[in-house]
Image (cartoon, rainbow, N blue to C red; front, top):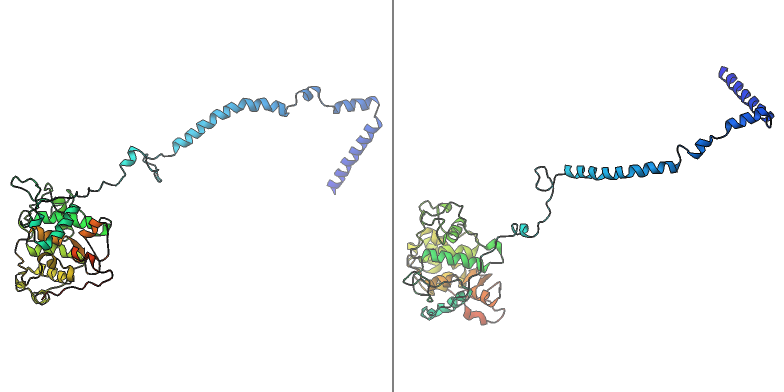
Length: 365
């Protein structure tokens, strides 16, 4: 109630004032009151908050602001870790030029060059086509002459050394399957512990021999053969080792269990009892390859394996002429002609067989 009375008193006073001004209009008192309400001329000429007055201040402060912004950006940029800094976290941009060359894959070994020999006609007639195909691919090399240097002769009937066959086997497999990394054999590296005491890292054939040993294709301490501490690289290659090293690369699976009786029944070998137990598995697996068996291709029809007999260079080459099982494989003839069928003929003479004809293994009583 008191507030309402005060509000009413104020409104009444305001009304009286308005009546007083109205009544004094044109009089001296009214003129004085009007002059008190007029704007100050100085403020009118220089208003404190006009847009014109603020423009110089803005322009004057503009350069200062422009100079501060780059410094602020620089400070922010310098605070962000760059690639190479210890605190940098994030993906790296691909490098170009010389720096990118360091990230490129290591160059692959050059393919062997084609070879020409003057004495291939001295090999058994049945083996000559195999030698010609492999020579065309550069997968067999010339035999060393009396001075130890490589000549122009192949010497097909000379015994092949273990190191030479290991090198051929390694190169042939990797060239036959050059487009299938899963079937290639990785070469040994010099930082590895040598699998054999007589094949150190400085040996010219260390990469191939070590690679075959680490792949489990050559018996060594790595495969549990504690007595196979030496490779004897310059010793002649026996027939049983010829098949033992090659058969796993045809089947691409574990060798079957074998016994003397099983080998005798399959091959009819009279000397099956002379075959080493480990080689028995490879000989039996080779029989399961039918007409593509390495024994048939290298030795023809025989009732004696002669497992400890030295293998000739021509026989070793014949074994390497084809890789694969009965259903799929690839031969040197396929590579030489640029064709890679899933089923290659057992020998070059069968290349003219009728298309679609089923090739059945010939029995070996």
